[in-house]
View 1 (cartoon, rainbow, N blue to C red):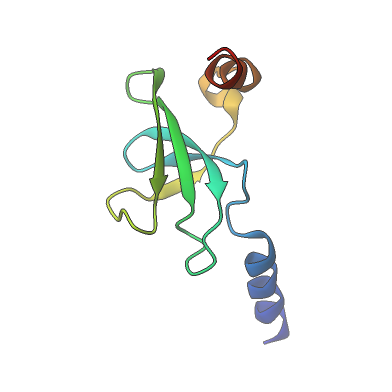
View 2 (cartoon, rainbow, N blue to C red):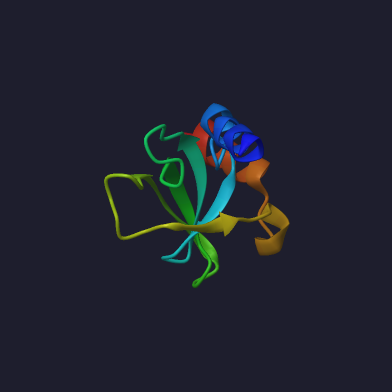
Length: 97
Protein backbone atom coordinates (compact mmCIF):
# COMPACT_ATOMS: atom_id res chain seq x y z
CA UNK A 1 0.00 0.00 0.00
CA UNK A 2 1.29 3.45 -0.99
CA UNK A 3 0.66 5.09 2.45
CA UNK A 4 2.66 2.40 4.27
CA UNK A 5 5.53 2.94 1.85
CA UNK A 6 5.49 6.69 2.51
CA UNK A 7 5.47 6.20 6.29
CA UNK A 8 8.39 3.77 6.07
CA UNK A 9 10.38 6.22 3.91
CA UNK A 10 9.60 9.04 6.37
CA UNK A 11 10.85 6.94 9.31
CA UNK A 12 14.02 6.08 7.38
CA UNK A 13 14.60 9.76 6.57
CA UNK A 14 14.07 11.23 10.04
CA UNK A 15 14.09 8.27 12.37
CA UNK A 16 11.38 7.26 14.76
CA UNK A 17 13.12 9.20 17.53
CA UNK A 18 14.93 12.17 15.96
CA UNK A 19 18.23 13.34 17.44
CA UNK A 20 17.45 15.68 20.34
CA UNK A 21 14.26 13.87 21.37
CA UNK A 22 13.70 13.42 25.11
CA UNK A 23 12.72 9.81 25.79
CA UNK A 24 11.91 7.63 28.78
CA UNK A 25 13.49 4.17 29.03
CA UNK A 26 12.09 1.00 30.58
CA UNK A 27 14.63 1.36 33.42
CA UNK A 28 12.99 4.65 34.49
CA UNK A 29 15.77 6.89 33.16
CA UNK A 30 15.26 9.89 30.92
CA UNK A 31 17.61 10.26 27.98
CA UNK A 32 18.33 12.45 24.98
CA UNK A 33 18.62 10.74 21.59
CA UNK A 34 22.12 11.54 20.29
CA UNK A 35 22.46 9.23 17.27
CA UNK A 36 19.99 7.50 14.97
CA UNK A 37 20.17 3.81 14.21
CA UNK A 38 19.51 3.16 10.53
CA UNK A 39 19.31 -0.63 11.02
CA UNK A 40 16.71 -0.45 13.81
CA UNK A 41 14.99 2.96 14.26
CA UNK A 42 13.56 1.84 17.64
CA UNK A 43 17.08 1.51 19.10
CA UNK A 44 19.07 4.74 18.76
CA UNK A 45 22.05 5.80 20.88
CA UNK A 46 20.98 7.88 23.89
CA UNK A 47 22.54 9.79 26.78
CA UNK A 48 20.81 9.07 30.10
CA UNK A 49 20.85 11.81 32.73
CA UNK A 50 17.80 11.61 35.03
CA UNK A 51 16.08 8.97 37.18
CA UNK A 52 12.29 9.23 37.19
CA UNK A 53 12.14 6.80 40.11
CA UNK A 54 14.45 8.82 42.37
CA UNK A 55 13.54 12.18 40.80
CA UNK A 56 17.10 13.46 40.45
CA UNK A 57 19.88 13.95 37.94
CA UNK A 58 22.19 10.97 37.50
CA UNK A 59 25.62 10.42 36.01
CA UNK A 60 25.41 10.98 32.26
CA UNK A 61 25.87 7.72 30.38
CA UNK A 62 25.94 7.01 26.66
CA UNK A 63 23.96 3.87 25.76
CA UNK A 64 23.68 2.26 22.33
CA UNK A 65 20.26 0.64 22.64
CA UNK A 66 21.00 -1.54 19.61
CA UNK A 67 23.98 -3.21 21.29
CA UNK A 68 22.53 -3.20 24.82
CA UNK A 69 19.23 -5.04 24.75
CA UNK A 70 18.05 -4.69 28.36
CA UNK A 71 16.69 -1.12 28.02
CA UNK A 72 14.09 0.03 25.53
CA UNK A 73 12.38 3.33 24.81
CA UNK A 74 8.92 3.61 26.36
CA UNK A 75 8.15 6.83 24.48
CA UNK A 76 8.87 10.52 24.09
CA UNK A 77 8.27 12.85 27.04
CA UNK A 78 8.24 16.60 27.65
CA UNK A 79 10.71 18.23 30.06
CA UNK A 80 7.88 19.94 31.96
CA UNK A 81 6.43 16.54 32.88
CA UNK A 82 9.42 16.16 35.23
CA UNK A 83 10.05 19.83 36.10
CA UNK A 84 13.30 19.75 34.16
CA UNK A 85 15.16 22.86 33.06
CA UNK A 86 17.01 21.30 30.12
CA UNK A 87 18.82 24.49 29.02
CA UNK A 88 20.10 24.93 32.58
CA UNK A 89 21.07 21.27 32.79
CA UNK A 90 23.00 21.40 29.51
CA UNK A 91 24.72 24.62 30.53
CA UNK A 92 25.91 23.13 33.81
CA UNK A 93 26.71 19.68 32.37
CA UNK A 94 28.50 20.82 29.25
CA UNK A 95 29.75 24.39 29.68
CA UNK A 96 30.73 24.64 33.33
CA UNK A 97 33.27 21.79 33.18
